[in-house]
Length: 154
Image (cartoon, rainbow, N blue to C red; front, side, top):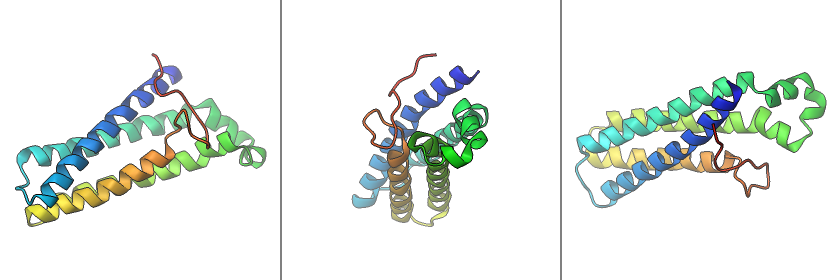
């Protein structure tokens, strides 16, 4: 189960990034060009937030069954001083939770804005902050914090 969740979490990361980039493209384009917020844009907003929530659920499930996290809590006083253990035990989950909350708030606020430009602007700002947080906390292959492969097999 653990390997399947790990591979799924790794794969869905790319869906989150692609959907966020596409949503941001639509949001900035609509905001700067003063376009009408279409049904398609609303679907993009909703689907992006939904994919982020799916990733959150996979991540939380993985967090609670992970041997890395189990080790982190079993050996907290020493593990908190180990870069990789601290990253996965505290930093990754905290920043990613904040990122998903930011995306959720942005999606909800954009949905409720009265005019089209405000919807685009709200979505652009909140989703940009969420994307920034996500990009800083993904364990990229080139990350100085900790690294993991870009793709995991099932």
